[in-house]
Length: 362
Image 1 (cartoon, rainbow, N blue to C red):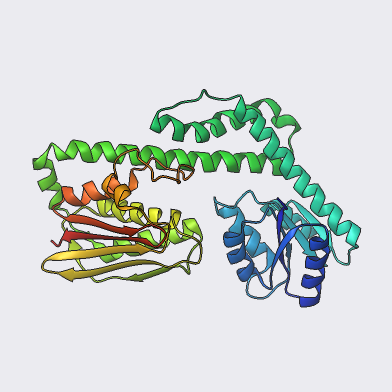
Image 2 (image 1 turned 90 degrees about the vertical axis):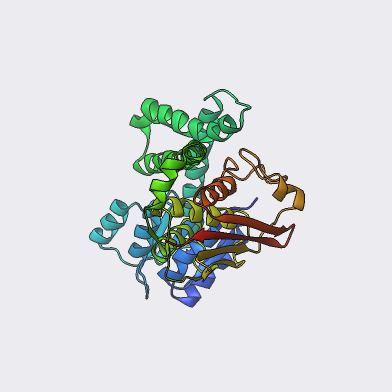
């Protein structure tokens, strides 16, 4: 498969010329005319390499690089500045911020292709090292939890060992890429372990009604919690334009951290199982002393049999490659029911899913 490149350049002629040159070398190329548009494109397009001008309107190249390196999902993407500025201070600033290379204007076709090829070759070398090291790490597991933990554990242990033994010969940018992969794996482990702990916590609480009654005395501001979770999830998946929200002001008889977990799980599933550009709705209303929470998507949907068989460590057929333990929906359902609410799912294969929860208002 051809590698994907993103060119961020405000000069239309330069932008289109670079695009034409790179496409003639069999790369898949997208373009953006300013830094803000470019950053949004990075989130959607997930390029293998970015070529970015420094001086641009709306957001300059330094701004794009800063946001890129701060975003855990895309932080390790190779970044090459395209600039006519030759100040040592500018070059130094870019490299300190994590730029991988510079291409100075004016440049020849050969220079452009050579710089791009060098950075892509370096990236492939890093990925190949990672793959080889991971194949040596951690035994195979067939248990539901073990299978999901295996890949991030292999990343942490394998790359950690690689850095310990070969760090003296690695470039700074190479180390950054490896550390970024470890960071991503750590976040995956955090999510997986968190899901499991929440499942067993709710199971434990189901046998302790007196504890649940005490927890019901804690009140959550539903609008505040939902706004926070919505912002976190759209940022995580890079789908700020896909989520429609509408919230009422209501206090629910449930601690804020439990409501947070419920909404995070439901939105996470909606984003995972729907395409970029498709609509997701997160809406609340109030009826007969209950907060009505609905989450709907236009994703792959489920059959009636799949809805009926939702349970811990079960995944929908055909989606075994989606990361997770299959605990999101069951955790949300059991948490809602634990606090005296109800939970229902309506789904159609290939059309989408609608989840509705009724949560007691304090």
